[in-house]
Length: 406
Figure: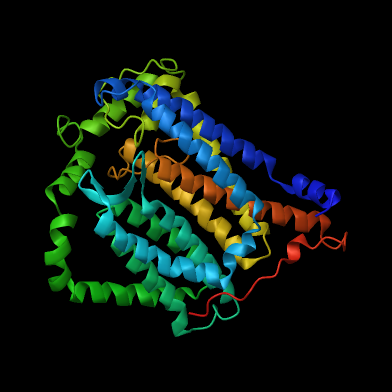
């Protein structure tokens, strides 16, 4: 690859998007330290910078993954062998969690590797985005016509979501379902066919309820899960129990005001707001940095999501376009669910804030996904500026085998 081509590739990268991503990661790292320094010592008996150091290590790993997916041409991930690996690999890994997984907070959702805990369900999000983008990109010519083969991905998605839900991890299962819905709707599939399948599945679930309710009913309608609904509907009535998190989240957000109490000056992180560095990190941001801090985070996340949708619109390749939509939907949906939980708009689901909350699996997932998004953006810009002008370069004509036919 000659120097001229490398210069053209370098000029084609979306630097505003890259800067926004790293600004958010750096800010998140600072807030992880600020929000966890007290609980690390008092609650866990660790060094004050314990969670900060772990998050920093995950960020370094994430940056490496980001660079890899940013450089490797995205069409490589549309190859049949890769998609087949994802197709069979995702259920295999999720089944392995039940056999050799680590249980924490009444959920068997992690693999424990000494110093690290890895949550496979996080990476299933990216796997399904890749799978759906490849499958529907391959079916573009026939999606407007009724065909039985179009509904197979829908049943596969439900199968994967069921495996995650019975861990149990309903929050992740719901997010995956919403991401996949956005991709399916954007794929060009006949909406009539989609509605028929939803109606059919609803009838099947209702008919089979005498069989699955005795197995999953206790988990779905467990006392702990119902208490979350009580805490959501009447948080101040259950302020000492189910509404404890939400009430203290309100106190943190309300006491921050316009400018906040100052970085590191949060009161709620002194044991009043549990999980301050994970699910409720935005509450601490609001308390310490006020409206300006919240606006900064939401603004950067909104910029990334909107940038992703613009990239999807400009991309001429169906796989790249659907992949960009999936990544944008993942970040947007997870942000809305996290913010909805800490503000009492929806029940608390335990979903981290993208790129900001503490959590290695989540951070690594988003860095890999955003690296792909930057890669797609680079190809779009390169094609717009250089394709046809320089016949010696063929970067946009990477060979691609046909995708899956099922």
